[in-house]
Length: 456
Ligand code: GLY
Ligand code: MN
Ligand code: MN
Image 1: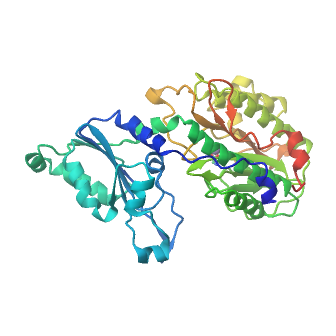
Image 2: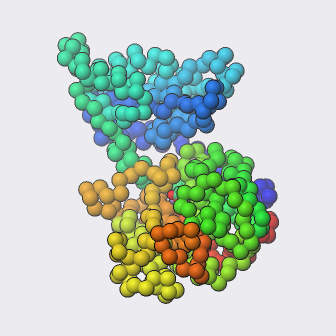
């Protein structure tokens, strides 16, 4: 099955080049002053029992500027005699540790194969970083990641008078660089899109494999294993976020995570699962009948959500506010539910954010940015106004309707009881048509019915 699915996926793309990492660094330093020092810390590893570690995934900003995935790393940018120098503090080579925990690139490896000018042992961090900081006027650091570094910077600022006397300089202020970095990360390069396309293709075929292996009586976790097993088989690092696999009324729980129920004949399954490849996320949701044939009520709701999603995708164009897809999806779903007799209000009333009945059945947003984080960085309303979409921005489009008959807060229409449908794709804004990165994943009723229950 995995091999058959792989036959549809192109080769893995070239990794992000060292030149691209350098140009990302340069785009940031172009905004800085020569007496700034920027410090990015990766979070430390943590254990869930004794010496069993949680899988380590570094901070996305570290991936963005250095592409360094090892734990316990610090990246800095500082200006010396008019030139910006990038430095990486890494775990040094240590044969005993490497025998137990795995090989390390070490300082030599970092210098040879990563886009940095200098590399140091993390064991010398305090001493070397202190000298950088003492020669700066402003430190750019997101606090709250590593308390030892926060303390070091605060102490340097507190003792500024003495330091100034020694060096004629010393930090006097601290700025969080996150917003500047988010602004850079928001627009994806060609090579970032190539990574996202691979993650999206793998995720699409993982969903197809799950559709093809559908049959009543399968457990939700068995679908999860089909999907996540394929993520790994295809060379991604696994899931970009924990997979949601909910059948029947479980599909009406937005962040369902136990995935331990049986999938019964006649139910719709909702799977929200995406792979991470070289740090970049895909995020796909599909919903399909477990037995391969939508019932009439399921079809009615499915088609409303699909129409809403298509209308929303059509809004992912340069110059549209990022809220346009949400507004378009809401309008189509409100019209659909009025037509189906679920909502007994005018369209204006149905769409009212406080009083409208649409929010009983559609209670989340339609889009979020996607990139190195599945819910990627980027301010949605700079200066209080919705951001206008630009070429290179990537966002999800994920409308849904959820008729949880178990909910005490609403009267669920009998005809649609326990139907939960969400359809989610990842869309790149281009100078032309919206580019649906996840378009390999089928979503029309006909396409889904044609493959569900039919193994490759
Ligand atoms: N998978 C999380 C989301 O769709 O936002
Ligand atoms: Mn999403
Ligand atoms: Mn999702």
